[in-house]
Length: 194
Image (cartoon, rainbow, N blue to C red; front, top):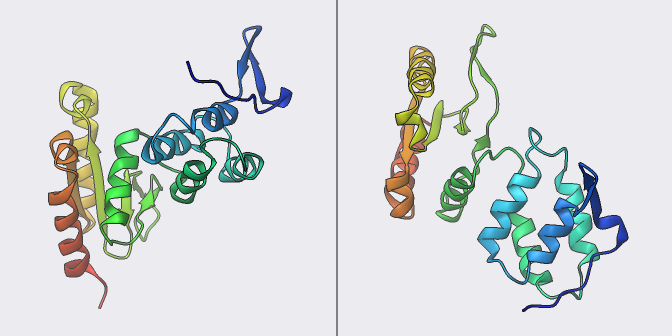
């Protein structure tokens, strides 16, 4: 059993009449138990505007209030790499591999339009100046017919406008994204504006 201190009375949320630990309080309370990367994945999920309404400012405040608590060093390290926009733990892992591999930070799940304003899509990761889209394809992208069809149509829209679409899979993740990072680096060099 591992003991820990509560982060305070304001750390409760009520759902369906049940008191629950507030998501940010849970992040702080798990800091001594999780790795930095696990805390980053959790932090990314917490600041996804489509899920929670929380922001990096909320996590920053929690980090300041956690000074002196067990896990506060890992919490601060994780916070430094938490970003808004990631929609899955796999996307977070890919982003971390990219930036830790020395490549620039991509945009995360941003709307991309043509010069004429036509919506192309909202790719997982984007390098706009290089016109490079990176999509993490979980297995459901293969097994779900509607998702599979939508992915093909979105890829065609991007390619018709001169974008390059790079697909990354769980196989790449098992290899720590080494091959994907090499390809991304090469494509960024080839496609950089002159």
